[in-house]
Image 1 (cartoon, helix red, strand yellow):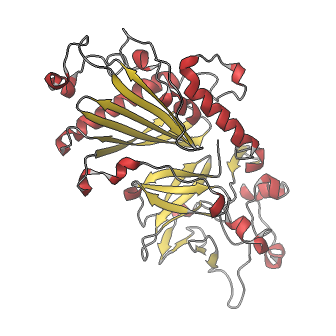
Image 2: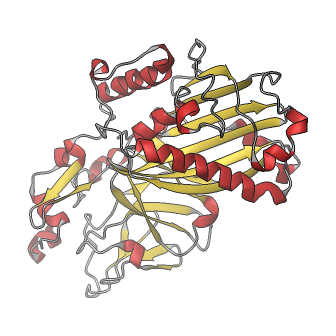
Image 3: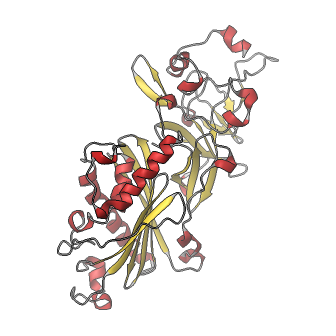
Length: 402
């Protein structure tokens, strides 16, 4: 799983002043909207005192209150109040949690999962269709949804870019099993963070709502022109599908959120320039969800669950070049240290379980706080951090010293 990227983790209208827990890259986050400024905040969902989930707490002004002992944290992750303290007693420097950068764009909340300074962070992707939405006087109507997979997000990512599976996994829906050939294509690189393949495919006979409008596109498959289709990936975890139908364009964006290595929550947006009345929204949602169910029936059973790093471990052919490009790019980022490694996990002994600790930018931006972290990644601290994460207590004297 890749760190040091912006992750679209939730729809903006789902984030309110009620704290909620999200899981990204195996790490628990508490996400909420501040009541005064309406700012979205993303903190590590783990109080440093006794490990309570901050998501079970509540907001006091723009601060979140731990439900266990009432410790209050500001949006930057610093504890500002410890109710049990006697008057005049200071707050330890270690009384802080990671706070991750947040932006809102394209109807999503994006969280930067890494510690890179702002000028070194990869950009968020460009979704140009969102400048042309029906509600703003444009041509694209949107619907949204989510889907839970029991599969690794990279397997899902490759599936979304894979053109050759459509005639078999989606036969009769948008794949034509009588014409499964994939034309040769060149991989397009709009930037260093994405890649796309564009081909002309032969569609099957339309059905359902679209079938009722068959006279507009023609039901005679021999006379129907091929449909130009683009599919590609956008790092770290996104898929874009663009189908140019005779009646208009259909675009689907997926953000494949890694819950852990074998569980993925997909939040998607489907845009269309045809049937743009709200009356067609239900059909658009149902069609998109059927595609997910068809894909999941196959991808959830793919073995090995994780993509091999050795390109020779799986057989590739010419139509797989878009996936090969992804694997090569992933290896480049792994060589830069952007792949989650054992240094990003700490393990408790009883019961034995692993937690992700991704350092936030504050750990780099504030050198004077370099030691002021209780829950440290393995590479930052000896193994006592693991015991503390799982609930071991510090003596009062050590707390006072820090």
